[in-house]
Image (tube, rainbow, N blue to C red; front, top):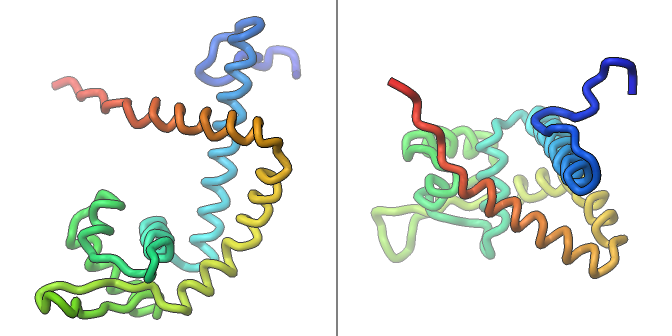
Length: 168
């Protein structure tokens, strides 16, 4: 570490022992999140897609029949119906989704990821997922359980944070 460099790290006070180890864990998590965000940006760029488009495709591909109602995407992405319609128009134009009439309700539709989209996403993300899986599989069962518990607790912690109200 160079002279004058901040040893404490962003947001965290320098502290010996237990607090220093906790700081190192949080810094490692932040570094991983930054690397993952950069990878997602590169992936979106290579596929010429926006973040919500890629998230929507991945959501659809996780469904048993690769389809969902547009309202499910609205809820999942936290956007408006109008935004979903525009996004689905773009995805349909590029051959990544198709709209399918609901056989039980003529007023509604399903959106299904196409085989082309499935192949494209698997080809683009497959190597990265394989590398990540290789790291996870090398961990002992105890280490895996600790990581899963830690990440679940971190998810609960950040999900519980309410936005700070702006002062008038």
